[in-house]
Structures are given as structure tokens and as C-alpha cells.
View 1: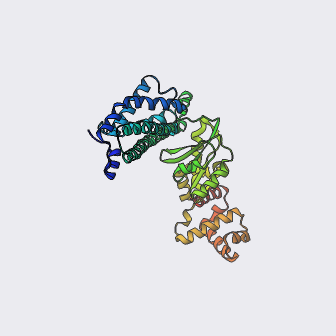
View 2: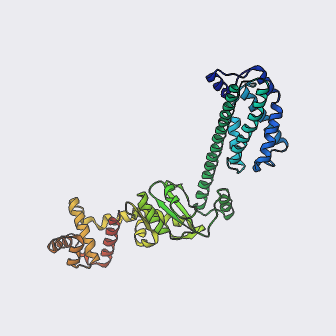
View 3: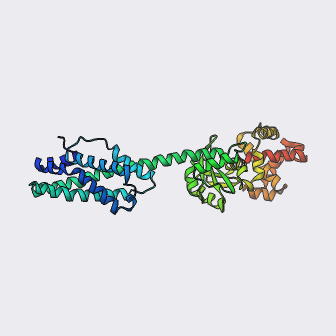
Length: 386
């Protein structure tokens, strides 16, 4: 006969053992004790009032009896997977662990009451009965702990499954061309996400999860095509929330326009352009910077335009080129007002006059021709937003 580890640890530490007559007396009543434990649990724990009937109830009775046999050492130990499975099943059934924990406490109470009486009738000493009680409650704590592990595993599995389904929904929602409405609705149902009438997309340079959790609504988030994005349903006050969150998280965020479901890819595309205009920690609303977004829409063409328009500066040193670009940009903005240019650049008006003279030498008629001036302004604005 093997002794259960819970009872064995107490017996060995105290050198106090149940004599064979006491063990035999307890073992003889284990089937009835298991029945009593299950009946009391069914009466006292409302969540199990119906679930412990029929075949399921018989399986629980058998499991309870086996646990009792292992406790007194009348059956070999088996894997704790049995009790983890109980915890896993509780989560799958939509219950908290409270009911199962109550069942364990009730089982320990009922088992101890009958076992102590049987041990006493068989001549067990008070000390042996005392340590039997300690071992019983330690054993129940062990089983309960294993069930907690199983419950936690079920929570992680469900969270992981839901996360995968939401990733699928995000890809479906932002697919181009747009997904079939029935396919989108099915993906939303699987992901437990209510399809909104309108939404807005955000692009973030960093992990999207922390940003999504700081925004109102049940936001989707994830990686799509190498870009980190967040989808906010029925946004209200989104820009303010995004600005605050971006500063708090020290990330750059682009906020796309609020659109219908079918236009979600456009909102994300605009957000991806807007994030490149944001400060180190801030948020930019795409619709507030349409001209700048237009400049970034065709980077290859824009690069060629910039190289051609600013070619006269190519022979300058890096420092000189940077100063002349700043001066030319301010000169165009302030329509040649040297005082305004000096104030913006924080330099002396004489310095402005020198730089403007140098610009006229380099660019010549380009500063007076309307089309050439337009190209210069586009080139300078795009260069200034890099």
C-alpha cells in the first residue's frame, strides 16, 4: 500500500501514523463518503445543483473516491492533470473559481468529519487524528492550487484564441479591395467585436497595444504589412485622446479620417502618411495636414523634383545649404520682408540681405518665374518636413 504524499509528509515529520485498523475502517467507507461529499456539494453550491446529476455526477463521485483513496495511500498517485482539467472546465463553462473552491472546502469538511469519527472508533490517538486533519486540508489546498493552474491556462488559451481572431478581423477590415460584407460580419462575430457604422485608423511608431488601451471604445490593434495600426470604432474626441496618449507613451501617432467601414483602408493609408509628420511624441490628424500629405503621396516623384529645383545649392557646404534653404523658405513665406525673415530666423537684417543676395545669384530667374517659384516652394516644404 502506497501512502499519499500529503499524508506521508505529515506522518514522517511527526512520526505519527494511522494504524492499519483505522486505515481499513476509512477505506471501507470511501464509496459512501464520496457519495456524501457530492450530495452535500450539490445542495450547498448553487452552481452545481444541476450539473452533478446523471453521468457527469457519477464521474465526479468516482473521481472524489479516487482522490480520497490516494489521500489515505490506498491508491497510487496520478498526474495533477485531473485537477487542472477541473479548473480548465470551470472556465470553459463560464464560471469563476468560487464554486469549485467552495466545493473543495465542503469536501474537506465532510471528509474530515467522517474520517475522524472512523479513526477514533478504530482506536486512533488524538494526536494521529490531529495530524490527519492537517494532512487533509493540506491535500485539498494542493488540489485547489492545481485547479487554479488549470483555470489560468484556460484564460490564456482563450485570450490567445481571441487575439488570433481579432488579428484576422483586422486584416479583413483593412483588406483592399474591401472584403465581402458577409465575410466581414462573420469575422467580427468570431472576434466578439461589434461592427461600427464609422471608424478611424491610427498609425503608430511603436507597439500599438498600449495606445489602443488608452483610447475610448473597443479598439482593434496589430501589425499589418509591417505597419503598426489601431482601429477605433465610432470615434469621438479621438484626436485629443491620441495627443495625450502619444505624449504619455512617447510615440508618434498619425490619425486618419473618420470613414465608413468600406473606406477603412483609406483612413489607414492617410494615417500612415500623417505619422511621418508628427513630432517625436505627438499626434497629427491627417485632415489637418492635407497639403503635406499630398507632398508625401509620391515620394519618388517628389525626390526628383526636389533634386532638380534645389540643384543650384548643390555646390554649397552642408551648413551653407541648410542656412540658404531656411532663408529661401522664410523669404517666400514673408514675401521678401527682410524684417519678418530676420525675426523668424533670429538673425540680423544685414545677414538676411546677404543671404538673399546670394540666393538671387544662385537661382536667378527662378525666384521671379511663377512656375519655378511653385516648384521651389514644394521642394522646400517637403525638405522641411523630413
